[in-house]
Length: 352
Image (cartoon, rainbow, N blue to C red; front, side):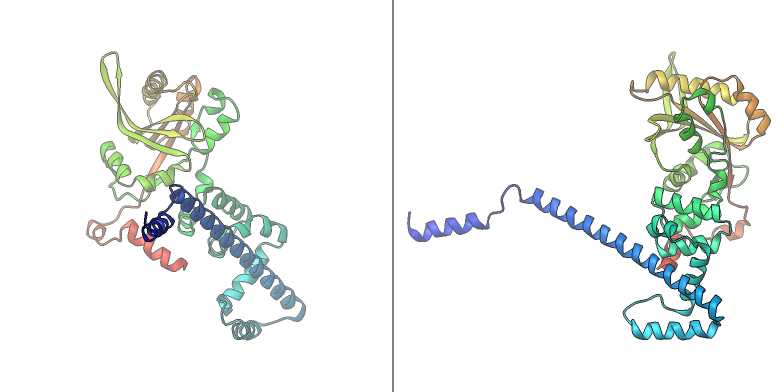
């Protein structure tokens, strides 16, 4: 073989990528992304701690030296001049820092919890909540579920902390601990379907179709862990067809969750129908490793005492909740309302 041809073959071989290169590249990109995430988390943590310490120092000097508003204005101007590359030293934000430190006097809690969420999350807690225990609940929930600021705002405005685990259930009697506690915590009462523009007299089919059309919002309202399986799921029992309104699987509970929608007040007969569905799902769909299926009956309204009586002697795990739609609006205004996507975009701009 001529030397020139041999040399060309060597160059071509050197330029040919090895078979393992795509995998190597993917792994390297993953390492870089993880490093970027850790850096972003670290930067956020340091920023929140810095703001808290600035707020604490302002508080101390205001109490000791009786600083007025003019001092904060001057401080903002001097900090901007000294650190022109940094944002966040406006008089307004310095006052937020002071309020932040005043609301959370314990630095340890700020380090362990509040530094894990963004400054905008912390401002939301300050502005929208006044009770410390509520602020703690939403701060920890934001960390646990990875809520964006917009989602946090929505959960606060719909009073999620009051609705969580509030359904009438028989879980404590029909499920072993700790599954019974977890099952109770995945319930809401009422469920807030404010993303649906339906009339109060909407039929069950309209309600179901609306939830499916806004499945992302529905899953957010249901909570973390719900995986959508099907709507109008067909069960063949004794040669007859029966249809489940909505079928989910819960990843933490490791069980199917059957949801029956009722666009009217709760009636005890609904429990018998749910018993039938749960028995069929456990026999036909449940894997040997799955836990017993759970039923959720979501009605327009319910009487607490009637619901408790209906579940008293029931041996299958069932919960009963209400749902609420958005407030009724005049027909001539509904067409001019912004969509959920438009609202999210506007909120996203405000969070930046």
